[in-house]
Image (tube, rainbow, N blue to C red; front, side):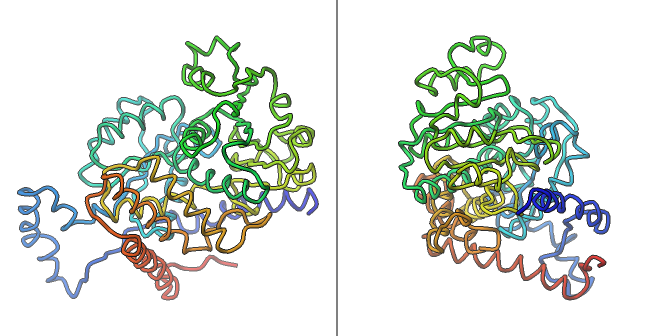
Length: 448
């Protein structure tokens, strides 16, 4: 594909989005799930009948899961301070992203979701807001929060909330990246525990990817982080006070204490996982230099996952000798995107009424995601499933649910088969509902 064609293809989703977002004026809406045979039914669903379930829940708070949709409702919560590689664009500008996330939750996972953008950059206020929302939701999906606030907010809410709390930019990206890396290693004949990895970018996503990869068996000493000023090495002593989380990374990565630029880090590396600030335009030079890929080990693995514009286009990386190239975009092969993870992971979490989402549950989802691709046959342009491979979501849900049961964090015990069938039924229902609304014209098709 010529560079101009690739650029045009990459720019088309944004052009279409500017036409279709105003057409629909939002991407999600509330649809009743109970029957309404006539206005007399409101005496059941509202006053006076509703008082009876209210009293039952007052006597036994756990019955809120029986009488309400709490067990299938998730809040996507953001303050818009680190949106899609666009940076701090504010809560209003971040709302289209959160609505999109809610849409994916529903269609791919059968999970009812509210998009909530909070007008505060104070992490304490954000934490308190979420804690006050707990009675209404079965879980929180934190989204697009700037570092280092995102680390503190996630850790605090996971510790203090009684419902599962998940940061998709961290844990979701990590789970899907692990799945892709496992299969990339298999395709190129590598062992996960022996590869040398360069991680370009030290934001929330890449830091959590490292943590999950470490739990999955990589060698921390063979990981080299690179930020905008170069390699994270023990010589970067200014980070002790300025960015202590980076200093913590330095203590267990880069065992050879390599110094210098990204080019130095890439020499002989097996893999680069890049989640840096997105380029403003694909016409700008690639962030990962072509010469840098040429200097890597034979058959290198390139994950260029900045959104919306990857650090290097797949054709450029393949032309430089990469064996596998993945990006965060759906319009290129090998999309390493959270949308392959969070719908199934939350589906499984909610179905067993898990109290939290552990790293082990994320890893279980990642391995199942990798297995789905293997069952279909991995190849250079099919490293992990796509969103069209809908079976991945109930399979992930089953893997996550069973792991939650094994770890003792589930309120309901299900077998793999039981969890799979439950998730499959709910996901099929959500898809059928959308199809019916489209066929009836209640969701109109856009003009030609």
